[in-house]
Image (cartoon, rainbow, N blue to C red):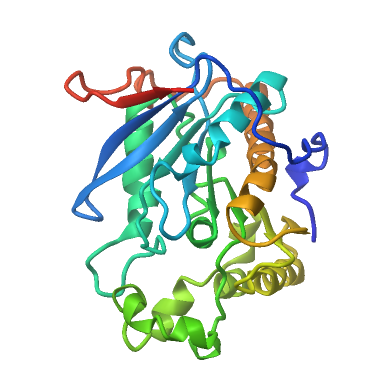
Length: 327
C-alpha cells in the first residue's frame, strides 16, 4: 500500500467512536433531481454544513455518498453520519463540506446493459451538474469526492476510476468487488443472475461486466489517470461476503501499478456496525484532500477566467421547496 502523496503530512484520524453530539445549524434538504440519463427524478438527501446559510459567497467542496443494496437517500442520515461530520467540522479535523446522498435503488450505479437506466451517467453528470447549479460548490474535480458503502463502494470506485476528470477523490467501505471473470462468482451470486440481467445482460455480457469492474479497471486503465485520483478504501477482515479478499486484490493491483492509495483491512464484518465504526476515516480522508486542494487554490490566486456565475449563489428556483430536517 502506498499512501496518497497529498495525505502524507495529514493528521492522524480520530478513532472510531459512538456518534457524537450534533451541531445546531447543519441540516439536510430532501429534494428531487431530474435526470436525463434515467428519464425520471431521483430523490436525494443533501447535507448542508454548519454556517452554510450565513456564509455569503463561500464555496464548499462536495462529497457524493452512494448507499448499499436496499438503501435509500436517507441511509446516510439514518446511520448518524451527519452528526459525525458535524463533530469533525467543530473539532477542526475537516473543513465544512456538502454531502449528497441519492437514492440509487439496487442499481449497482452502472449504465445498464439493457439501455434503460444509465446510473453512472446520472451520478457523474446529472447529479453533479444539479448540485453545482443549486448550491455554492467548488465546481471542479479538486472539490468533488465520491464515496460509498458495499454496493455503493463498488459504484464509487467504478465511476471514479473511469471519470477522474469529474471526481478528484474516491473512498469505499466494504466495496462489493466481484471477480473479473463472472464464471468465478460464488454460486449464491450466480443464482441471482436473473436479477442482474438488466444490469449486466443475461447471459452476462463479458465486455460490459469487465468495463464496470474496479479490479479490471485498476489493472487496465491508464495508470497516470488513476494516479490523478486520491484513493482510500477499507474492508472488514471478517466480511461475510468475502469482499475482504477482493479488496486485498485491489490493493495489490494498485501497488503493482504504482498507483498511490490508502487501504486498510480492519477488524470487523460487513454491514451497519462496520460502516458506523469506520465511516469517520473516509470523511477525514476526503477532508484532507479537500483542504490540500483549497491550499493549492489559495496559493495560486484567483483564476483570470473565473466567472461570478460559476455555480449557484442561491439554493434554487423559488417554486422548489425542499424538505429540510435540522440536525
